[in-house]
Image (cartoon, rainbow, N blue to C red; front, side, top):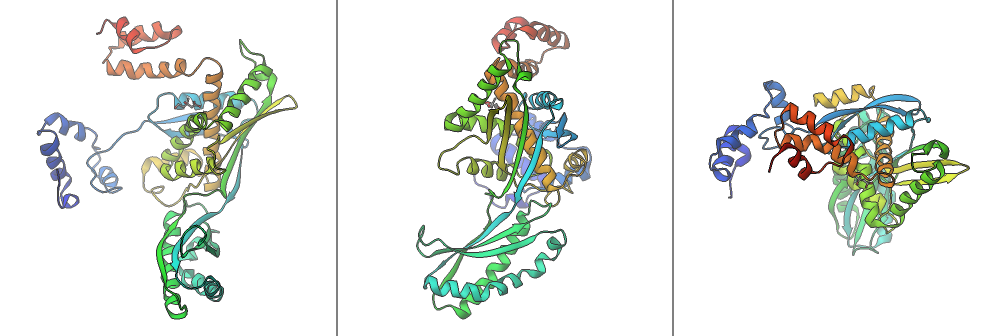
Length: 428
Ligand code: MEV
């Protein structure tokens, strides 16, 4: 059903329209939306303002995974995620590595890129000459916008003209390299690019013989040079399980990682598990998980075949295991100062810099990957998964406290299945 001027309607009028149009004015549908409204009107208004056409709030569980030893400091990591087993897995992995030296995390670089994409119909030589002569003027045009960022140690680091005519007719870029300090920097980068593009256009009109047309100006969410590495290492002996010697476990573990390195079908699932740990912290700290996801997967496919973001090797009787991924996140700007839970998360993490946060998120991603691969090469993931899922199934069946107790006891040493649960509770 088409509607005009929807965004201008009040929240109530939007809901009325929606219910009339799609729910036959069902009062239960109205209740579903209204039950998530916050009692605190100011807080609700704050959330309403984050996006357009807000009707209600969509809750995600907010949890913490304690005992993360990262670079010698213990963190309790906030995680916002709907998948039942993720926090339990992260906590278990953190505990496992706690007495084995914990996670070492290092930021490899923090360079971000943005581009003015344009076409030019004249000669490349003329454009190169023009860029040389006007480079400083273009930079000058954004000097005022950079003042604050420069005070925080960031700003435009360099600009370069790139000839892309081999890939597309008349296509060139001016590539901007940025350091955005503790901000993720999307707004800063895009503002700088838009201002610089205007200056480029003005200068081109006055000086160039051909036609220069700005196509677009936008940051790149691909940041292979804004990257972090998290690692763990331990003697293989301590990896011994009931059924595997430490050496056999380490070999199987390294082979599982190698399979993800060579087999894209496995790599996607493997990296998805890493992103369980990454995204949950990215969301809890108010960062943009779509940007983080796009970035990680582009990096995983950088050599033409999608591959694992984590790696492992056994050397001199030790398992070395690490995650290397691009990550552009911020601890200032965006909603970091506005969303009360995001502020809480950042305080919980002891007010990290963007670099600290990169290191924490990478450790969470590696922990999650460790937990997944550990389950996969031993008991399988369904055991742990279904235990956590039991709670959801019990809620779905509206189980009484007595039934919950009965089910938890019954499934303590058995595989959980919906059918078995229903049989146990006598439901059809
Ligand atoms: C489930 O959300 C994630 C896993 O499938 C990851 C993996 O297979 O490595 C368990």
